[in-house]
Image 1: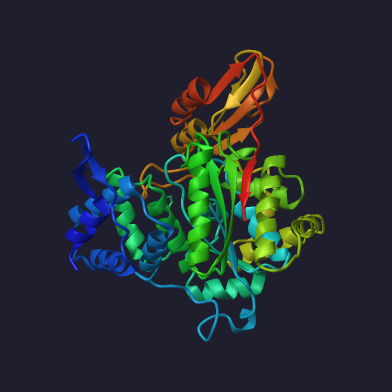
Image 2: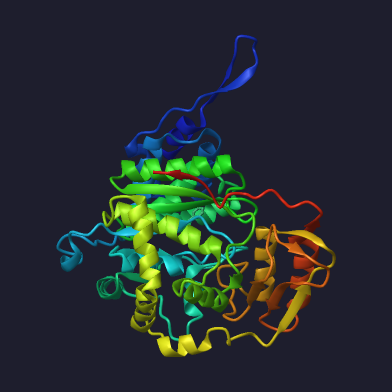
Length: 455
Ligand code: URA
């Protein structure tokens, strides 16, 4: 097999139509073997970046079938370690369980994983949760967890499994041995304008999720200014690819398509989002975060076989919060992973950066708070990072007193802003005042938080 032949097949050929006009004839579907050859050889360094770039661009233009996407995902998955949760090398006491995890395509103020994992764990679900870090305008679950003093996300696989046995879930970052193909391919896609391809995104997300050992996956595919996919139609295409490809790989799957035009909840930040998580687990969380958490959780509970209907699952989740069991499990996980639950609870509502300012309404009206611009202001403040080796600040962030659709009077408090230092406040405030917040006389049209569920 030769890489160039595979690239040519995916690229298609220039031919002339009946009028003599040059057209690109459709590319040919690749076989599993061809896709595996390409991925394996690339990881081993036997295919150079320029050939892989050319292949990625051919996929960008011509797409892939579900079968091809499945083969791509499978080849990427087997480029590294796959965590086994069943069988001899799994967790014997949980062998009969269906392990379920959730994946979000990323957003601003998206702390859903944090309340979700203990709530579903309280309902009997076993969740092997592997998360990522903040990058660009989007936040990262690992950075939020690390804002809890002592919390360790660098678990060994054995510690990860022990955590699931103890608390029903554990939280860790990806090890370098998980899907090395994605690390190499994503870095190349990033500099060759081939990130925005549904089959390539599917292969990238799904290979990493399957590698963590889950039997079932619930995807939160976001659309809007703060999301990777800007429109509902693109988000629906990605959600469909993720669900169908996951099922073709023998996994159970469902997806929610959700709004990310305005940040989720009341906070954007690392420790600030931990605070909001505690509020959610005390039943005092913002309505949007509670709703999305419960709806994603209900899908997880159903896929795990812990309830027969969505109504039953929702009821179980509400009871888990009202009884205090979900908060208890969250704090038990904090302890297991190296944090101090009592110290954490004593810091709620009190731990703040000393570098603080406020944004007040410049006029009367209804406001819109844009997720993307708010996320960028967060990066200036130290919540997120531009490059993967940038440091984040645990106490930086934004408390949103008003959000899209709220009416304000001139002088009302809209945002409290906390920086990593004094200097970052000015550019962040400029971004928020001039770009993230806008005013209108008319109430903006309400967009539904959950646009669609794909089961
Ligand atoms: N997130 C991923 O993990 N991979 C992609 O390709 C895009 C978003």
